[in-house]
Length: 113
Length: 106
Image 1 (spheres, rainbow over the protein chains, first blue to last red):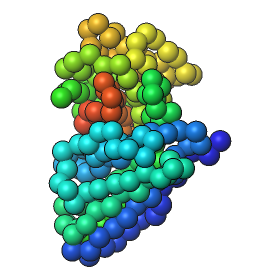
Image 2 (cartoon, one colour; image 1 turned 30 degrees about the horizontal axis):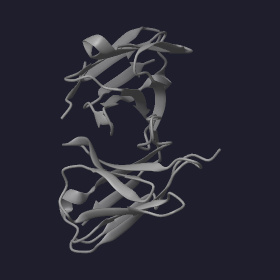
Image 3 (cartoon, each protein chain N blue to C red; image 1 turned 90 degrees about the vertical axis):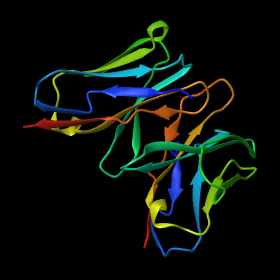
Image 4 (tube, rainbow over the protein chains, first blue to last red; image 1 turned 45 degrees about the vertical axis):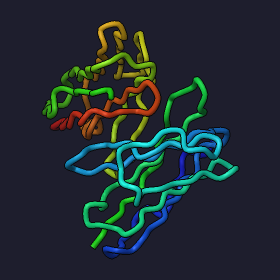
């Protein structure tokens, strides 16, 4: 069974640009969550999608957005990139419902220059 | 929201030693997981343990839900155990502690 797949693995962008990251969950999993990891702030929750609907949202500005498709794949978008957006972005999938165990992808390392 | 505190923040061991990592929660959780972050950044699942005790080889974990803490035991540590260990708990989405950085010396 394939794990959670995130693409791309590495990305370098310029301030002001926008970026889209992709996450394909484990087959059958309907919940996808996104996290940002930085040395200063640690692992912080961005948002969660379940059956194409955003179910929860963390405390991030509106420049951070996401969506989920009917096949449960999810994308997150960051617009008007800032240097502080440089981070490891991790995606996790879970079955959803009452089954909460989360499985993480390898992450996308974003560098904003 | 829930606060998660992990201790110790750093731990240095000689190969073969045992260790205990702790995770305290400010509120009750219905989901608790332990992860090991590999050098490439991926969080590797160790245990899903909202309550009780589980063992997997040299690793075991215990969660006492009523007292809002969880422990991860590593026995006979190996250099490959090095890395950062995270616990995450939630009433919905995982909230993580700052991690314990473990260094196992040969």
